[in-house]
Image 1 (cartoon, rainbow, N blue to C red):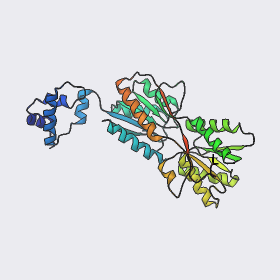
Image 2 (cartoon, rainbow, N blue to C red):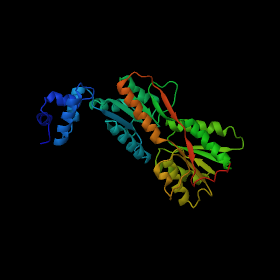
Image 3 (cartoon, one colour):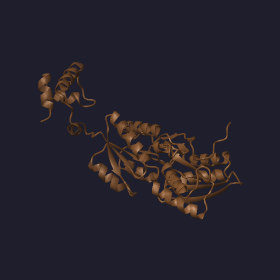
Image 4 (cartoon, one colour):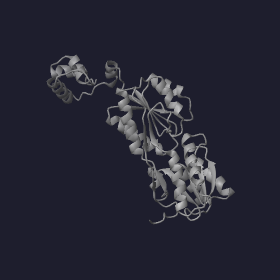
Length: 334
């Protein structure tokens, strides 16, 4: 049997209610009592029962982490940063795998079953209405990597995907590419739509550019590889903005198998700057998305919403920058 609250009370010479108050956030207990109880608990190796505490406080300290792209290795970094960040705040993550689910009702049902205190939707492909459905039920929610919009009714933390599309074209022009292409993820994904919008907008400013567009079926290695194989058969462009690192790595695999050199024959530019992109055998030039800052800010917001559920739904936008590696022609020197 483990050490119980009663054991701690007997060791400290206090009532069980005093021990309970000591380990209940916000409960009234004197400093002298707290020191006595904590010393007894340390001597016995006692840890408060989280389930029992939730029955007392009405708070489970569970935060639903909802995502829909577990095929993308970048999610391992996202999951690692989120779980450690929540745990450091005394909160516990409850992972919800959407897979191909786009109806928020099933996720809401699961989160209600576990009585979560709040939720973070971590997805760059889901529309704003998904997280707004959470907010409509009164559940505090933050949309990480979400779409920026003046009509957002929930806090959104992420990047300007439209600007990333512009950055890609500016990089291509600066490096002397003339036949350029956008190879996005799923055509209906909000991140794909916005990155394409910026790409086309910037390309239109350069009449000498020849720009083409295509889409992969998913943000995955296989989808990127298969789409690039189709593009190679039709005659590849000089450089591709793949819209995601994992698509770029799939495209890189297809190009090498076809006997084409990167960046000699074809250039590649990714987006995310996930850890794998920097591996020596990949060495992907990419647009850095500040994952750590986005996740830290998302956790900060959800914690604030637990105390103030009706706080104004702000947008936090982080800038991106190009990470120079080896899959594009060298950038011109200033």
